[in-house]
Length: 137
Image 1 (spheres, rainbow, N blue to C red):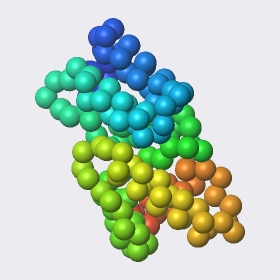
Image 2 (cartoon, rainbow, N blue to C red; image 1 turned 120 degrees about the vertical axis):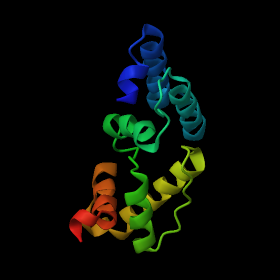
Image 3 (cartoon, one colour; image 1 turned 90 degrees about the vertical axis):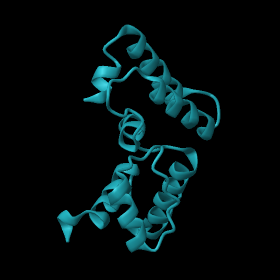
Image 4 (tube, rainbow, N blue to C red; image 1 turned 60 degrees about the vertical axis):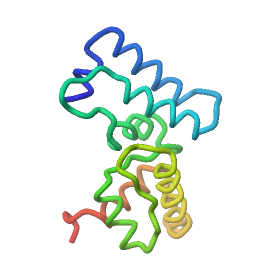
């Protein structure tokens, strides 16, 4: 796994943990924290594989703060947004505009499903997953 290799060294582990803490608890805007988190992930030491991917950039915030952060699997999310009629602004390299668009998509789903009372982004991401995955067709 690319992340495991990236955090094997003390410097990599320290950069990752400090960056994640700042992303979750920093005082700056969500956009500034997200940019810095992507920069942290991109700067991790790595061997032949990419570390800066959407799943890696979004999974830790999603697990730690599911009321705030959402997880993105690009293909499933793009399919779900298309089926839902939402104009998802996707770019393959992790960036704030795409993440903000995903948060807007989640807010739209939350509004549309308010009678079902989704609790957090886990419920919303699950809805996206079911709509965008071939497993449920």
